[in-house]
Image 1 (cartoon, helix red, strand yellow):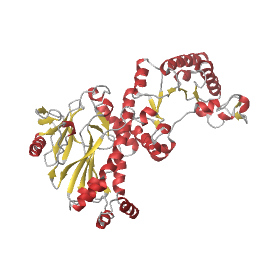
Image 2 (cartoon, helix red, strand yellow):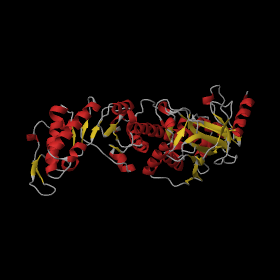
Image 3 (cartoon, helix red, strand yellow):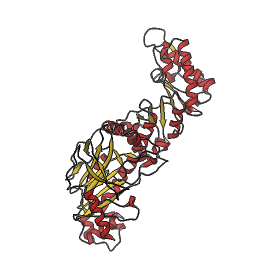
Image 4 (cartoon, one colour):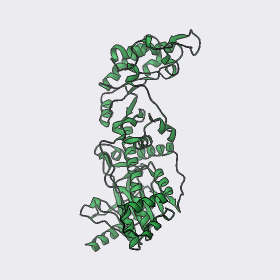
Length: 489
């Protein structure tokens, strides 16, 4: 596909024609209005590494038609991204439908060849980050969210990407130790039912060990499973057999014994049943136990839940007034079952200085021609209320200045707006073969994402039937669009 087109450009002598393309999505994912832009750092890394090795060229010789000229393969061996310029929104930014995540300029053949790679690196990353952000918005700022999707993800690469980009979207930690090592994401985990099921009697636990008290008191004889981690990281999984008859009573007994030694249990976990109702019953027992034995921290022991958690689950927890403090999300986070693809596209907008237009009767699928500058307009309350696309040669809009614009979807009418603040969205990130803008850490990207989300008005941020966010073009860009449409007809 890409190589076939590249050969066509090369044969036509157009391979070095200056060109520009844009990457964007056409419709908000999951029925919402917005997405979080993610994958930029990986995309820039791909640009730096872009080239065909001798082995790559040899393989292409073996699979492309035998009529392909040898000189084309020689040309491929010389390619890199040294003549490519990329502008983009900062990673973690909120983006809206039809607004470019990034813009790519360079020789036509190279710009075309980069399409699939950039789409792959940006689309899934942004989808998972957006999915994670939706869970965070539903859970609220105080709930601890754990990404536990490694075993459910589409392969190891998908698992690592999911861990990384769910952290950007607002999750607190991951169970994926490799992701923790590679990206510095906090790592958390508990135990599985199989661990508890593997013990049927204390007689099976050998050797027995002596667990010293933290301060004062007598040493206590506990099973070897406590030797290295139980005393500091005891979190009981309560529902392997029965929460009421065994899980919760046993947890309380062990936690109280550890308390006498100066240790504090870190929580309990549920993995089945009516999680919201059980959490309330467990909290009631913990409060009673803490009061009876005069252990104040007992009533605030965190209650964690898992078990195929979805957006609907979080809505039910909130509606039922649950006592849940920690939520582990796996399948419904990393596989994005509500929308498996963001549907990003990469479209040519200019070649040889001439704007390009993909014409269709469906206005949503029609491209916006020309190289553009993107602005975000803010109201007096500090909320963004419109994104504006202007041709590069147009002067920047000013705060407090009335603007006449055309909103996409309502191009037949003009609108007048007066922004309190105007923010250029794109920065130059790649030029002359090098990344030219300092890249933030993963934590900084995560913080930027949360700030970006917080700036939105509630009407645009809501997850169900949000108010459509206006994306507009200037009068000059609308005139160009109209002119090209008329010419093509």
